[in-house]
Image (cartoon, rainbow, N blue to C red; front, side):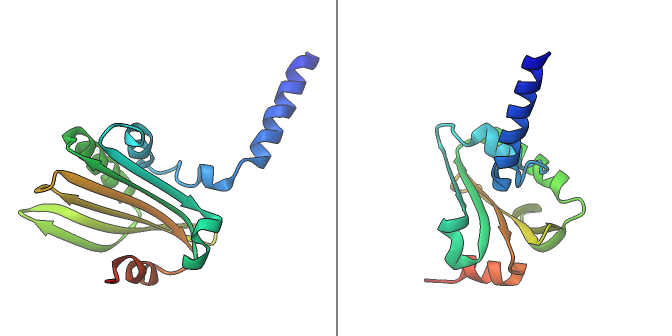
Length: 149
């Protein structure tokens, strides 16, 4: 019995010290896309948090680019449709009756605004999915991301 108490206390201590960013998007369906395709061939995933993002007022930035994988595109669309419930649609681009770009503002989590950006280029067989947490409002983040260099 004593052994179980030690294990419980150890797990509890680890849980208290775990970074909040590890749990950041676990409540979202798009997390499945990051988990399932993040390490697959043909995918590029980037995750930045805290210090790396300090100059941009972002607390978490996670993106994935997936090439030549129709099953990934299908899963992403399914996940997006579920995460879209309760979210504010900031922008949507539709080509030939199919949404190719979607920008969603999710309900706040604590003090952070949460955004999902999705873009699919069928001509290039590429999809891009981005998840952002920031103290800024969505307009400022979109200006930052979409500004021309």
